[in-house]
Length: 202
Image (cartoon, rainbow, N blue to C red):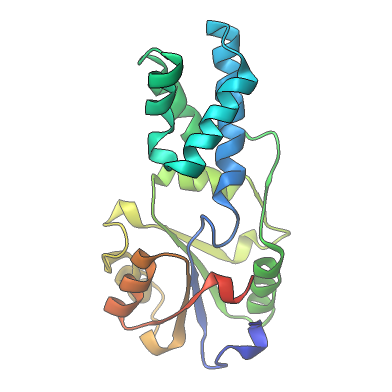
């Protein structure tokens, strides 16, 4: 699907951030590499082994289990949890995050057509903002309006979308959400707005 295939009456587009605009692993893997380097420096644990373990845990169990698995397998001290969480929220990445090519084209066409682009993202607001700041937007930054759902209630709760609609005087029928999760789909359904899975564009 391309921008030309979308209903012309849509005037506002809502995107999640992780795995919709860019691959979340591009952020997390850089954090894992830097944290592994810290452990190598302080605890003399091989950084490559640590990085590989973290990536393997992420791909097989999920990001929520990465630190716990490190503790279990490599006997990492609990005191490093704060270092890890702080790195996740505030890291200065060696490499900028790159928007999916087809999504970048879509965003550019929306902006050229003078329509609104919103990023409405679940997750720790500090971490999500850090991701946005370190993404290569190709000049799109002035046209992006971000809402952090966790500042009200995470999706699928509709609060953040209802706030967005009120803030920008939008009609529900004019909005399209680009989603990648059950939470987004349920949120769109509850809010009475249309949605399309991001895979339709990739």
